[in-house]
Length: 353
Image 1 (cartoon, one colour):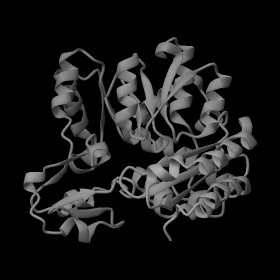
Image 2 (cartoon, rainbow, N blue to C red):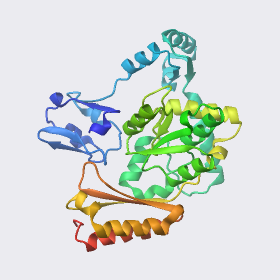
Image 3 (spheres, one colour):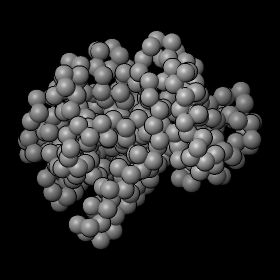
Image 4 (cartoon, rainbow, N blue to C red):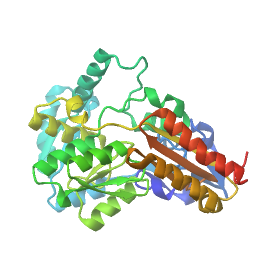
């Protein structure tokens, strides 16, 4: 639960052990331990259904208003994006008054959220016209992305990965001399294609544990201004302390306007490598990961992949699982090398069937 504190807040004293969140979680990512509901982060898709059904309000979205007030007081540049639902309810004539009020509060600019929707619409129209895939699953919603990656990995080929907004904006900032330290902050799960594109553009990068909390910690400790996760949480430290889809859309639009190129063209510099992740249930995570034969198998795979792939073996933070992930030039290679390591774990008697 600790790694979800940047998104969800949990009050233990408020939990009355009613099991409503457990029954309503669509992916069964909540369990009750010691009469307290706990979210299993490796299964959670961040749909926030639990925050809606909890009668005690033990789970709730983080309130960023105090942070917003602090940033305004610090004189930081903040852009407000007004949801289209506001315009639909109060009418287009209400926007000028709202904009004036927000500017008086300290925002540097106020824009309509529909601009981001238009940007995404154009890119999907391009994909539909090209028709490269028979089935396409939108990657707009982070919860859908997590649902596919965690619970339906067989659908990964249909999940659209049309851009790397962090890389595209990072290159733009570097050209403008605004990318501090010429460095972006990523997590260990970021795609190899991102790193190769960064190498080509002479952009440095750092890797952290999975979670935007760790990305932001690295950014603040080292003075970096841009970081994010593969899931789409992009952090612009000048404007916010956590990922924000609206802010990311605005920043991408800035790049498109400046470069006068389509999102597809800018993202074309990044070749996304096929990735396969398998969860292996074990009796003891540390013993399994540190097993000499397993480490030997991992090293053999890493050597075989060379610069055209990578292998990552890590422990689950909440379950008795070892996660084996391989990125390679082809799906068949991913399958081959993941199974190669898993087979060694089975031969060593580490796997719990």
